[in-house]
Image (cartoon, rainbow, N blue to C red; front, side, top):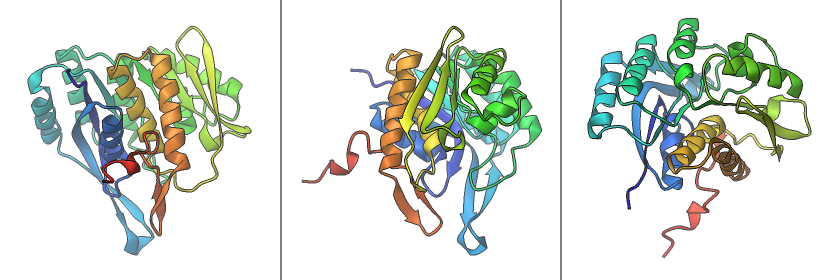
Length: 274
């Protein structure tokens, strides 16, 4: 039996909860084989109030990583997360084209959680130009959806629907906007739009601060689902359940934050107990 091969092109979260660490853990939980190309390394300083530093990887090294990964040919699915430089975005697009990649999830990360600053506007512009037209689906949160749609703050489901229509004009085949805790609704509501119909995906809001990595995990779960042959809607619905379990079982990691538990859906903590 051939294991499906799945790639993440994203940043490394040294605290272990988001970025390529979240992606690889999620890929494994889905029974897929994960590859990773690092675009940046995110570090946090406990002596400076857990301040974040994002260090981009040299684009030539990003290219070398992707050359290594694609040595065996096209993979079954891939996702992008935090992309350190415009050059890294352009290089990623070159490999997508060269190997005619399908099942592409673009998580349009525009800020590092824990920082208020957005990534450089030129990075966002390059992502819109080079990656969104190739996306099977893109997974913005409310802030990112507001930027991509040029609508600003989104505060209602109706606005999310308008934003989804505008985002689809940028080229992706589908979009899921994560309402999450930012939307003033009783449940956590995500909006899935495939260009024809809107689907609201609701789940009870989980009162926890241990949710670091939820967005990366959601996108990675969709990616692995697509690799396994799920329809886009099934991949999104399954990912939503996978992430809900991960958030419900979030773990305190240090005095500054807690992470989702990527193994929760499969009760991975019970493995290898004998």
